[in-house]
Image 1: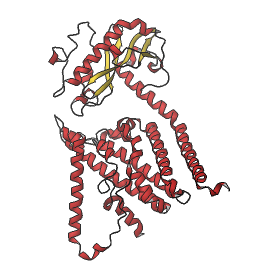
Image 2: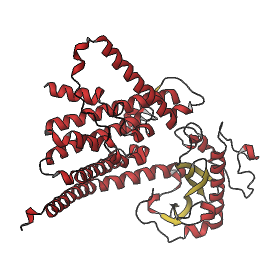
Image 3: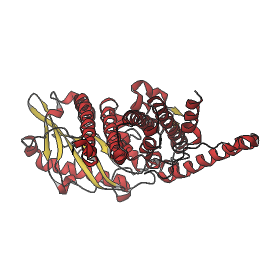
Image 4: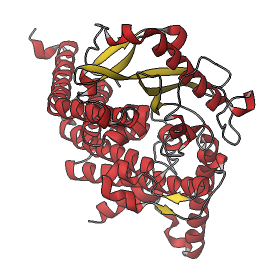
Length: 214
Length: 231
């Protein structure tokens, strides 16, 4: 009995041939686009980072000084999150740290905060979220300038100040949405406390990021 | 050439994947909050649909019917992955805003539906054309839904067009009117369901108007290649 007579074997061979061809195609496109994708991600990251740490403050490439930070209590995630160190003349001047607000209206809100050595907020941006369009999504710069109000604020240990107005704090909530800003402000406060407590350790951290992080 | 006219008519109107076959509803409803997203997903689906129709038509004589479905699935999965990689590389922002719905094109029943119902038994040229027309029909429904939801929801058209087309397109955004509080229903999935229902109703009204206008002689030839049970 030759190979071709057995339909099982023939079909099996054909299927594996197709599997090979399809995998080959994907591998080819992958190798063609791999570099461009890496560049795009880096560009995106650099763009966000310059919004939370002004370029005038530092002279290093931020995405190259990436460390991993782990603090479920204050950064809101079981996983280690990336943070980026800014240097000027070899001296650390600021840190951009990713944090997660786990108690958003619909799931986690991922944000990044730039903080300088005096505990001043340089900038805050939302990285990803699933808040209600039209209500909670005012945390996006594209929709509202709400996040820019954090810039320039100084960290204080008085947790009562870092609350939305409804809870007696200083931050505006949006019309119809209190949960989102409450979670957001809280996440910033916690991240600031974390940096305040661990600044030196962070600057000396040797836990480097591997590969790309979003 | 009347063959091509029939294929075009099927894809764009008579057997429109969105309005008549009701295939691919999940992405259809989920990403049509703005025209930009709708158009992006529409084009991505169109590319995959054309590609898969072409490939399936090319191999149709070599694939025994017992293993045609796994072969089609492999072809479609490979194509979707390629399109996803390409969009990731050359339209990064669109990649971010389409999110999970880009890889999910793989599960869009229109694609395997056309592979099975059309491309596996028609010539290369016809299959490619069918893919193009079905893709255009699907994209058209996406865009109309996107436009109406964006207009009602946030009073703009082409908001964020620069994500899809590059920076020059940011000037395309039209602010039709100013909304202080966006019309939430239009922007959330339930609004998409309602809009979709209205759109189907509109199509049926137009169809029955056309039918009423025509003399009864033509109503014999019903050549629908309609598939309702795929996937």
